Length: 108
Length: 115
Image (cartoon, rainbow over all chains, first blue to last red; front, top):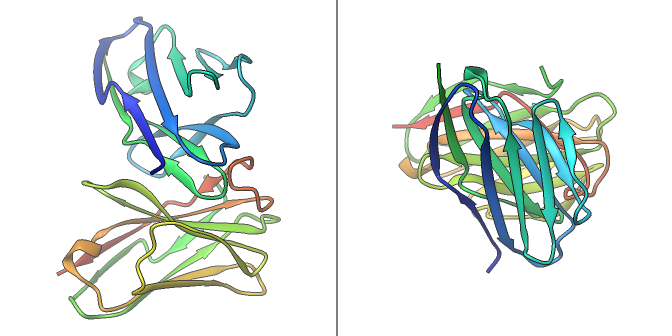
């Protein structure tokens, strides 16, 4: 059965810290891995990764896919309180499977 | 604002009833996806429509059905509602039909409460 596992489930850090969120997967027909940020409302798109080893970067956020290890990491540097959210990883083809998410809390 | 609209924002109904949730995709997007998010199950993919045709099916119950109309808006019908159907229902849209390679933009969701 396809599955997507995110770790840690919950993380509390202080402003300025760097965090690494993990996503591992076992899915058939892998086409891409997507990262989303969900605050109180709908998930908002962060990154789409399809090729192994190519880092995608947006400001203080970056992500990379390792197809050999069937995993991806999302890095956030110099965290801010506004980064507090649930970070979701989704993998698959048309049938997207989501992980349970990592709840990140950034304290002032 | 993603450009995806969903109505209603909130819906409260009783067990055994039927409800219809509506979604309008972003202008130009041909695919619509429906998701259910509950506290214990996380975000679950239900179904995808592309240009009026069903493209992919996920964990959608037989009591649930969906369709996409010629103007590309979509409706999710939930019938014989149970307490466990209480959840946040998201609609997302993307330009093309490849759910895994297209960025999906999520609407604000419809919160369904079944009493």
